[in-house]
Length: 131
Image 1 (cartoon, rainbow, N blue to C red):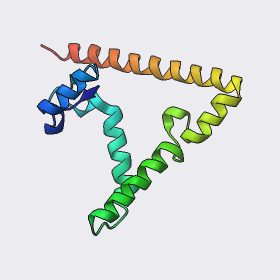
Image 2 (cartoon, one colour; image 1 turned 60 degrees about the horizontal axis):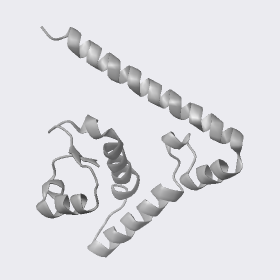
Image 3 (cartoon, helix red, strand yellow; image 1 turned 180 degrees about the horizontal axis):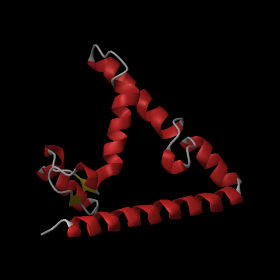
Image 4 (cartoon, rainbow, N blue to C red; image 1 turned 90 degrees about the vertical axis):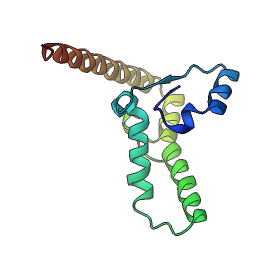
């Protein structure tokens, strides 16, 4: 599990639970949200697509909006990493279409290769700027 240094993640109780469950935990560097881009993107989607567009007047309204947001996000909303299918559409295609599975595996390889190239180029550029 990768997290920032928020109080909920550095608490003794949380870390004892992770140890009990044998979950490895790593922290990102302070003030570097780009090191945890997946969750930062998720938080941004939840805020912009579900929370900020609603006027929340009390806890129960907020709870209902968040519950509906998680249902929609995990089932109905298209995701770029799922080749812009919703999770339910993706699961149906994955289970019933072998050519789709191969196409998606190639899609993932391209994503990983692109990420490796960007990461390599970032470090290469940062080394050039060091005096």
